[in-house]
Image (cartoon, rainbow, N blue to C red; front, top):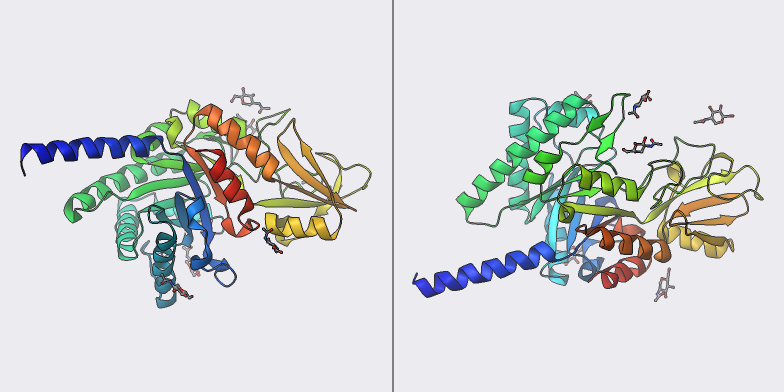
Length: 369
Ligand SMILES: *[C@@H]1O[C@H](CO)[C@@H](O)[C@H](O)[C@H]1NC(C)=O
Ligand SMILES: *[C@@H]1O[C@H](CO)[C@@H](O)[C@H](O)[C@H]1NC(C)=O
Ligand SMILES: *[C@@H]1O[C@H](CO)[C@@H](O)[C@H](O)[C@H]1NC(C)=O
Ligand SMILES: *[C@@H]1O[C@H](CO)[C@@H](O)[C@H](O)[C@H]1NC(C)=O
Ligand SMILES: *[C@@H]1O[C@H](CO)[C@@H](O)[C@H](O)[C@H]1NC(C)=O
Ligand SMILES: *[C@@H]1O[C@H](CO)[C@@H](O)[C@H](O)[C@H]1NC(C)=O
């Protein structure tokens, strides 16, 4: 190679690198169990920069992924179908999810052999099925020991993907994690902090799950489960995002979570229907959850009254005794403006099967250029 082409390559890679560093992340998770009504080929991939296959879970004894034939077909179908719609979209598979208890990850991360088994297998699966990276969805590291092991796991993972990229001449796999809404937690009565330094160094970004502030564990009062502001405490997206910045994670690596679902309650008295109104319990919907799409249909069918609460930046609907707190285009728009003002890296949705005609995904993608 002569000096001139080396120079061209250096300049190009510099330009590409700066373009990547400044482009907004617009992510969304695809729950594989929505395949029957929303197959990968139906995903409007042009509204996103990053799409996540949810979920894969390794064997709980060997910590290796065991991909059966049907899943293998779906994984290939996912990566190829979304790339066919949007050639620049990055694909990741997400490991775990809310249904895999924290004990599983805690065990995996606690010994060198189990971490290595998991890491090697994750790299193999990513390459085999055409993914650009892996997203760790450990909900959540709960103890000080878990937090230390989380830091060690991602450090070893980064070292392995670096090595693999050198050996394979392929771009390094992306490594991300879906985290608690805040960098600080108190899950067991002992306050814990995510390892900010290891995250900054070893992960490409974190998806802060800025939702589920209220739900089935708070059955006696309505609540805005993804409010931007909390007037009396720290259960808010603004608090969560700032805590990540305070933890030392670079702003462009902090990604704001946006829910495409709401939480439902049955009001004690339909006349008392604000935020925090007394409730008889949760529902309708499994675990008191409805998707944005279902909420739209419910609101129409029941002529619900929809209120946007500017103080918390959240939306709720009331129809008879049914109360639903969620995000609509108005609250999503305000949140995206807030995220832009914080100069964080972007946003992601859980989950894209909840969108209605892609209306929120489309609006969001046009808002933040
Ligand atoms: C591993 O998974 C199997 C099958 O789901 C279950 O029966 C077993 O209890 C699990 N083992 C541990 C240690 O969690
Ligand atoms: C994915 O599967 C669907 C049928 O389930 C098929 O129509 C489509 O062509 C497949 N796409 C790719 C890229 O394999
Ligand atoms: C953590 O939770 C425990 C038990 O709920 C509580 O007593 C303690 O005050 C909490 N600590 C902080 C810093 O919030
Ligand atoms: C909800 O209210 C019921 C009845 O008053 C009470 O027994 C229960 O402890 C309350 N639950 C919570 C989580 O506050
Ligand atoms: C909210 O967080 C701040 C800073 O972390 C802390 O000082 C304050 O006590 C918290 N407030 C509540 C209500 O937990
Ligand atoms: C959106 O979805 C509904 C079905 O839920 C459909 O009737 C409507 O035509 C779709 N398109 C637009 C642009 O609203």
